[in-house]
Amino acid sequence: MRENALCSCLLSSLISKLQLSLSLSLSLSLHRHYCWRSEMTNHAKVHDSSRENLVDAYSGKLGGWGWLLVTLSLMMTILTFPISIFMCIKVVQQYERAVVFRLGRLTDKKPKGPGIIFVLPCIDTFVKVDMRTVSFGIPHQEILTKDSVTVSVDGVVYFRVNCPISSVVNVSNAHFSTHLLAQTTLRNVLGTKNLAELLSDREGMSRSMQVCLDEATNPWGIKVERVEIKDVTLPQQLQRSMAVEAEAMREARAKVIAAEGEMNASRALKEASVVIAESPSALQLRYLQTLGTVAAQNNSTIVFPLPIDLMQHFMYRK
Image (cartoon, rainbow, N blue to C red; front, side, top):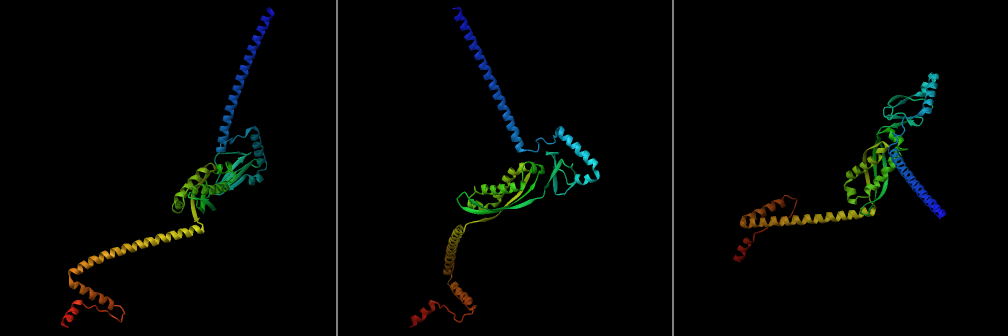
């Protein structure tokens, strides 16, 4: 009996210890999972922020070895002063800005220039960025409009570098990326329009493209100043169909105008006949006016209208 009681006690204590260890391991694993989740979330946030703007990431932090290399470069520059001055002084034009990197990191959040800038040999590198307005033409793009009509559209884009540091750090080739993005934006924006809107509302579509491009290229330090649609080329069959439709509409409009003119002329003749009927001498005056009009021209034959009343007088005498 004592042995059974002892075995039951040992078994119960073992089970309790096992449950305690399982609960501890489960809580520890949950705590580790929670810490891992929070760390991954913070890392993702940092990664996203660094992807959005790489300018603020680790700028100016050289560390101990970095400052040691800077000191050595300064000492070498001082020791070789007459010769090293030509390697340290650089000239930046008025329309340019220089982005300086020291040991691969940005030295300042503002670009250098214009004028003379000082760089340390062997550890400083710089990139010149042109700040002038650049224009490029968008080649002909085959676009399917909203009403399933294929047209060929080209345009021109004017842009400039607004932030030199972002144009160097956040994108490898800002001009080429803007060129490709302009082609894609042209197809995306015009693909949501009908053919009638495409032919009539070019200014509105240009503004829409400018807003889309400016918003997309803002992280690259690019400012899109103007977007213009140059030409909209329609297929030959569609051009013939539109020409036939326009000709038919013009002919119908001409017939309507001619019918309205005849109706107005008949009304005027009716009113004139009423006026002439009230005064018989007015008809004679109209005859004389018609003769004067005919005689003014180079005609050899003149038709003189004879009143019926005179003829009736001679007929009664016979």
